[in-house]
Amino acid sequence: MSKTSIEDYNFELPPELIASYPNENRTSSKLLHFNRNNHTINHRVFSDLVDELEAGDVIVMNDTKVIPARLQLQKQTGGKIEILFNENLSNERFTVIYKSNRVPAMNSVIFFRDFKFRIENIVSNIITLTNLNNSHIFNILEKYGEVPLPTYIKRHVESSDGEKYQTVFANHQGSVAAPTAGLHFSLDMINQLIKRGIILKYITLHISYNTFKPIKNINYTKHEIGHEKFSIDKDVFNCIDKAKSDKKRVIAVGTTVTRVLEHCYSKNIHNSTSDYTSLFIYPGYKFKIVDNLITNFHLPKSSLLLLVSALIGKDKVISLYSEAIKNKYRFFSYGDCMFIDNSL
Image: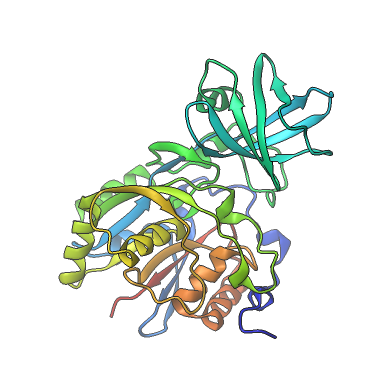
């Protein structure tokens, strides 16, 4: 089998370990603490991080805000069409992922209630829509959209998901999925970290369908990762660089933060920047800045699993996942998490 075969990143997961609901208390999630230097594994709860980290350590989180991105509409022919917001192009234009029994017609109008959208372009499963309404698409979705829970959560969306599938520090709307590693933080825990002298910084990456779309090519290097919009302030770079010079840990919370930081340091960006990244991190990638990571347990054969494997090696990831399964950790978006720690 090829060294770049996505089949090498498959694993058996008991269905009962797929989390359908989050923990009632965010910080009570299980935490698999793996130290990269001495290869030790400790089973903890997430709130233990407060005592594990030291003054001067830097935590970088993604403050994107999930929008209720799914809408059920109707075609002019009477057929149904479901759309999932993908990317905002301008005040009047945006793209969506769509589901429909038949491909909708170009220049036709899809609608619900009194809201109408014209189909401007169709490429594969992505439609570019023109908003024919006075309200911005974000305002329409905020009022009428549905929280876009991942398809592996086999239940209907509930009112509590509007709060639970959102980090407590979410600030800039634009994502169709939560930066799930950040879901484990509570406001109280954040305050405790700050009191201990741990520095918290935020970047923004708006998570799109590109983050979690399936890898269909057996050779994962041929996968089209797409692009996603991010913003980062110069102050984040300053804090990271100081922490590195002071031999303190810089901890990326999630794969989205990892991609933004690696994108910037790969391109020698050190000033406030808003741009797009299409960085695809898979085994063989040489990390420029990230060596500590808090991350959830990801789907088999996913780009997220490849990123974690690039950091610590495929065999180690599969071994840690086996350990998590043995200890009944909960997987995926609403599940438990892992701290990959590079401290001595």
